[in-house]
Amino acid sequence: NTIATQVAAPQQATFTHERQGPTASTRNLTLGPPSTSQGTTGQKTGVKHMTPPIYPRLARQNGWEGTVQVRAIVLPSGKSHTLEIQKSSGFEILDTAAINAVRSWKFIPAYDGNIPVKSIVDVPVRFNLRQQG
Image (tube, rainbow, N blue to C red; front, side, top):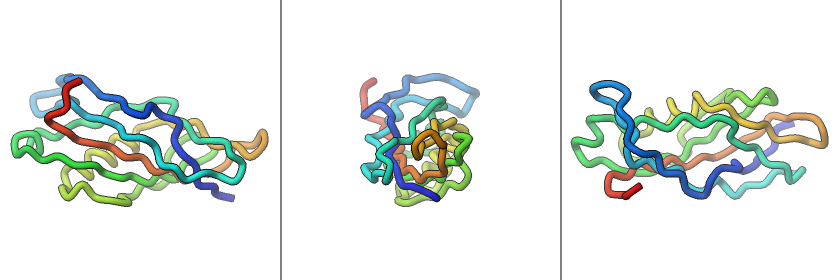
């Protein structure tokens, strides 16, 4: 059984500027509120480990911003199995950066009673150059 659930993540988490190489930056990235879909058990999937997405240099130079809605199928182990773009930012480079970040996340699985179950979560990842952190 697969249940749709919401990610128990901060309503807004802004990542501060960090250099991870000559072209990488995590400056001014915000995770939006989690999806509101609810599983039948009422137990939510959570994020155990969240690596901030890298704001691509080309996107920053061109002033490209947007929100990517990523849908993840989370296995009972907490690993994401399948990721897909539910709503594009309008920029393939930002969509790819969001997918790459969420792929590295470790989730706390949803539970049906005491049994971890596969679940579906929607995660909005915002790329915003003007937001002050």
